Image (cartoon, rainbow, N blue to C red; front, side, top):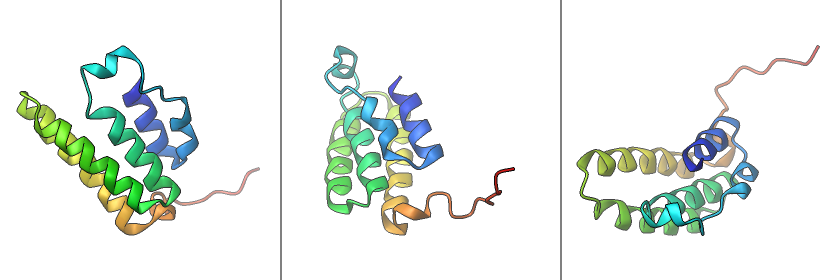
Length: 103
């Protein structure tokens, strides 16, 4: 569910999608890197650079402690994408998309 929320928020560029995220679910005990990454994306989409960087740092600390190297690599890739969004600004996520007027 959390990965779906991440993908949905990323695809629509709307941080409100992540409001349904509940970090207190027991499943997140086994993936502690995920909640801060979702909060980082929400902060980046809202334009809150400081909060996004803090959450990315927390996510990085958790993910780098993972035993599975593929998880560390995938999380690093996702954090990199969020970093790029932070650097470009919140309105830049879909600026290259063509807009079509409604019929």
